[in-house]
Image (cartoon, rainbow, N blue to C red):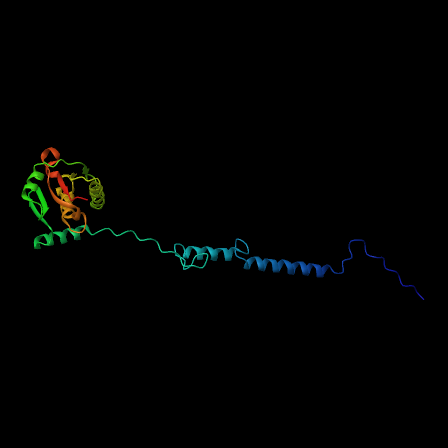
Length: 226
């Protein structure tokens, strides 16, 4: 009976019965990793979401939210105060003047102008015209807009009356340097001084000043007592 020949064990490091399985597993892992990287947008896993956020923020830029952080509607922006319609007011004054609805008797020839309420006598107007009422304060309107001038005049006359002043001088200019060379402030000043219910309620009379006090570019204004 013959003996079976014992086989020698394989050299160390060469016996790898699961080598093919390991190779297959590594190949499968490499394939799955490649497929995942191909499906992932550039910039990482969060790049898509970040891009969508940027597009949304850009699309709503400048939009006013319906509510604030506390859930309350935002307060509306304050509207600028409406200024009086100066041109419309002047046309209204001119129309009332022609109809005799203005409480002042007004004379206007060339650059000279004067006006007074009906209760003022001719003698008083003569004295005012000659500068016999010494003016006690003056106001220069050069460089002011119509809106600025109106506010300043209202304040000036009110302060003068509180100080018991009788006559003041207002320098309005002759309009030589204005657009078209027209005395815009002069026309407005006449309307303001003669209009009832406003500045005119504090005025008795006015007239163009003498040359030494500004001539046709200024007016003496006689005030009512406070």
